[in-house]
Length: 346
Image (cartoon, rainbow, N blue to C red):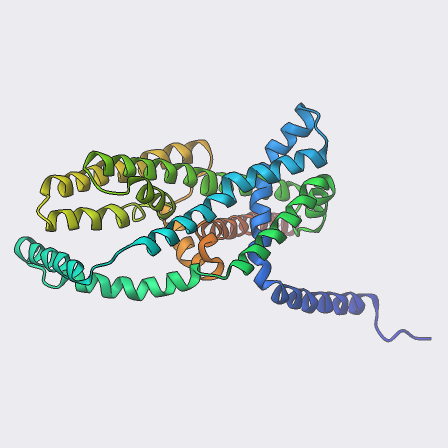
């Protein structure tokens, strides 16, 4: 009996069906993409520590995985919940006096008009901030149940990634459309980029937040710890993160007649807090990976609407991975062109 399709046709049909099912699966998993990407990032961060526990300390893989899950929760996940709780409590406890705010804004406008010939500067800033803020806040805000589901799935995946580490990594090397050499190269680059974007930027953010709190204490501003923590999270936005906190505070102080505190905080902020970003980033880039600030800023803009507050980390990471894949494709293309040239010359 003659077959309806030959081997090549059957292979192409299987490939087409697989591609369609893959697209359907990706679409179905779109709401869980943050959890999947989070598991990959956490695995990359703690892989070396897992190897240390299992190989150096001879601790079993299940206990080692449990230790990592607890550590990661307390140093990465819990701080986000603390921040949300602090902001919520602060907002609930604020006693806003509309008349006082109006007086302060009028003073700032008067100061800007007299010194910079700019009228209604606060009104313009607030209008633009409102337009940008609505999009960011709507992206960051999410239901508690959805966040709980995302974190639960992330830890579920992370647990099996570590307890079945060899099988997981062998499967990646087998099914990724790269040579083993390029797969290892991609893994190393992913590790370096993750360390730079997550650990490196996290370290910079903590330093900047701490310095801002110190600046608030030196110049007599209220709630230094609270605003230092807020600045820590905003400092994931390079160059513009910390100034979002200290510039308005300084302008309000100047408008109230406290020029020493306001100007002092501006000088302290722009000379020390902002420049420490450049110094530490240069050190991190030399030791780990060279991540351009433009990648981080564009990544955050892209990541916030896609992943909410986790977009501060995932956005820059996705752009870096995309650039790595382009680099691998270019290398493969050059290698293929060289092989074709050699074959042609023969």
